[in-house]
Length: 84
Image 1 (tube, rainbow, N blue to C red):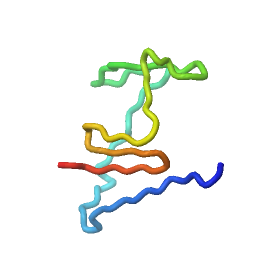
Image 2 (cartoon, one colour):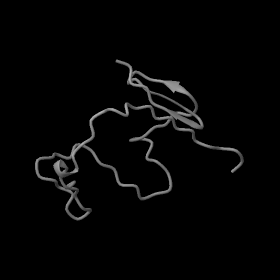
Image 3 (cartoon, rainbow, N blue to C red):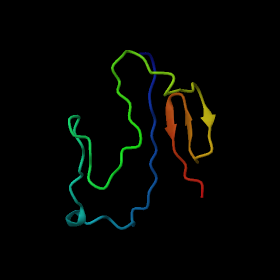
């Protein structure tokens, strides 16, 4: 596919505390026949059964854009910036 590529850069604190694996719990997920998870309420779902998006429920934007939730995205690269 030509010269398309994705470039990721992650910058973190090597001295940040690490989680204790003994504190981690199993992740509870629903199944297609029983999607309910105790303590959770399903708010919205969509079934993908065709070859295109249902445009009454979904939309998309092409190219670069800046939105109001503190991240930026562009064609061919992924950039996430927390702006606090």
